[in-house]
Image 1 (cartoon, rainbow, N blue to C red):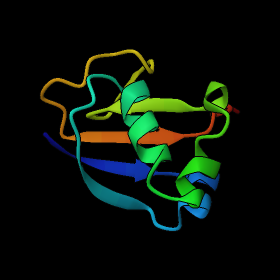
Image 2: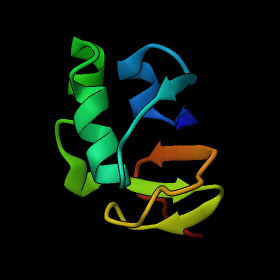
Image 3: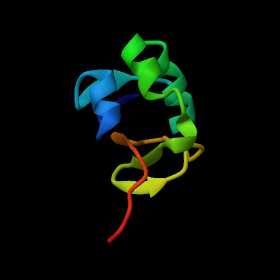
Image 4: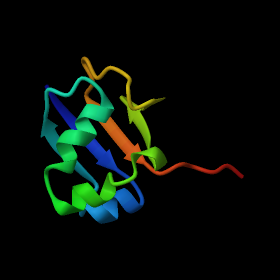
Length: 83
């Protein structure tokens, strides 16, 4: 499957771009992270501490073990604070 991967805040800075199209067989965001980490040092730095990440699949907040079946977009971002 092909998904659009979006990066926000410091993840974007470490990866070096705000989005990329990725061909993947990953079943979950966690598996996608494992694939992305192997792409470059920037990706590895962005995903070095996945405990501090949040994820959305097709613009719905989800956890890293949610299924990616049929997903078109996966976004990764740091925790958000409210005000």
